[in-house]
Length: 273
Image (cartoon, rainbow, N blue to C red; front, side, top):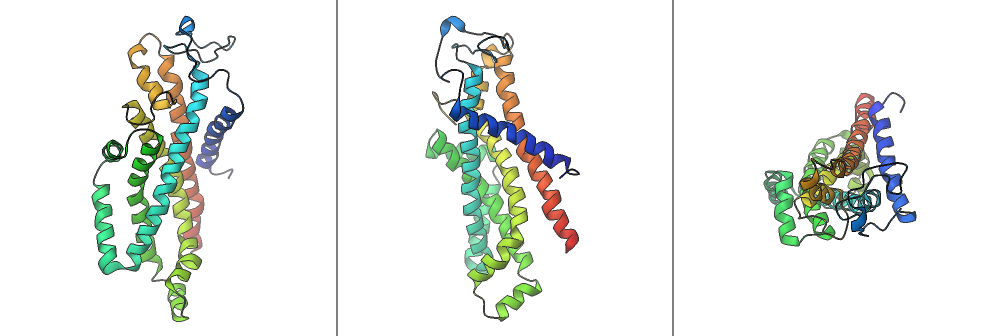
């Protein structure tokens, strides 16, 4: 841990966001949607009641950042979890039935990966609908081919190893082999991919909200806060800087954790093998 700077820094950044998320359920300075026109555009001042200032409707920015962490993490973690479970299932089915189901599944995954992430999410969210639920489904579908292709390739690599052949010779079923042998072997790569994917999901969610297709008012979202600050940026830049910093911390934190876990779990495993 001491030698892995990426993992240590990533954990610190993610813990900051998680602390904000937990605190949002315990205490917020003001209701996140409470408007006070008489206190519009108050600049950040740590000695005042509005530490990070107020926006164009007089809403407290700190409260909206805290409340927005709920929605951002819900969409980020929820969509990646959905994509992971579906991807593992499809990848395992494709690797088990290579000739027929495997060919169809993997060609479908190739077709989904041919679309850029944000473009695919835009297409899907227009079909399933805007909001938190639509964002989770749209981003989750985008994550499915990432994990299915990863699981498919790992199973093909692992199933040729001697201990897998020995398990088959002893009469172990495919399901037993998958649970007892394949899953533990794939777990390090899945964990690192899962962590990095959360950072990507948060970035896509903020992009969708920025374009008005993600989380909708009155719910707070960092991407939505960036979108609302566009017309005031030159005069009141703090309106965009604060949610921008929150996005950077979250995305960078999960990506650094993924890189750090990759060094510890995968590289160390490779050296041992």
